[in-house]
Image (tube, rainbow, N blue to C red; front, side, top):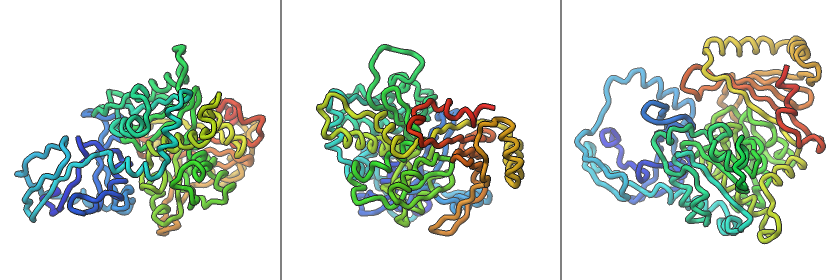
Length: 486
């Protein structure tokens, strides 16, 4: 189809494998054999959903800045799909062996047409080495006191894990779990969270069983297309909201790419306000955007945002225009290496848990949880959201309901439907979620999600901020009980 429509050259990652972050890097960084640059890319992905012949599959388009196509373009594409009556295809071209690196030349209908198969990892690895101090990370991984585990959940991240963690950083091959990419993700659900990354969770000492084996010091997991990440310490889970805040708080000292300072930081609206507190403390520009990575791209292109994140296990920076799971892992390894650079041979290393608890002691803790109500009736879900919008007009009514359920809950002082005006292009995104804001800094957020493949999903986000040092070590469910339990 490319040849038939006059495309001059198509680049394909070797064996058809490219992570979403690597695609963004290739668009932005790579120069082809003929000196050309990519003007965009198609990504065939199931993202973090189950994949395979009978499961999810999607086609995603990324622009020449390396980021996802904006809504204005995708809406136009969708409208055009309604009027397609024919398509062009050059059906006499011979097959290309995409397992072999090289260029295959054709004579297309409109002139020369090339297919270039390239090393899927080389451009991405080169970019990572320009961002992080690989030598410092290598010293950390070589310490007998530091153990490491990475789970690719049989997604495309496996194509990068061996190259980066083993070949470049010297980790043991045994530290890699499920790093053989499989078209159906080995029958699993490649969503890096405590529910689906079961093998890693058990190995890190967070599962229900007790194997008696000492867990690694650091663990991480990726989703199917390698743009999401989960960070774990020994018997310790780092929430995505805390993760992006901690990376931002430590980036200038620990990551060479940011040594001259951060331009700004951003988070999605449902993500906890942990990043807000860091931004205020460090006097950084701060942005709150709707869910969807494309909203960060405009800020980055305008030079206003360096680091950003979402509560749905997405973290990234302005090195590309996608969230980047391996980047997040390298960021955490960099922070650990930096904290331990004068202690690498000491009796005890600074751990993931140490770093998180020190962050809470400095900035306070945002207790946070999310409840997903999946595959609900779409009509009923819309009615629920509409009724809450009506209810927002009377805070007295809201507080009567809240206090009737739990008298020990703080007062609701504001309620709104989140609306975002892009400071770069002026575009407005409405109906992005309903927020109930409490006097003590707590939040309840309700949002309809469009990422599932069946029905509608209602997401409820619950957050409580705690500054008292004596109360930051509580179990999350205990701390959130007044907001969760009737």
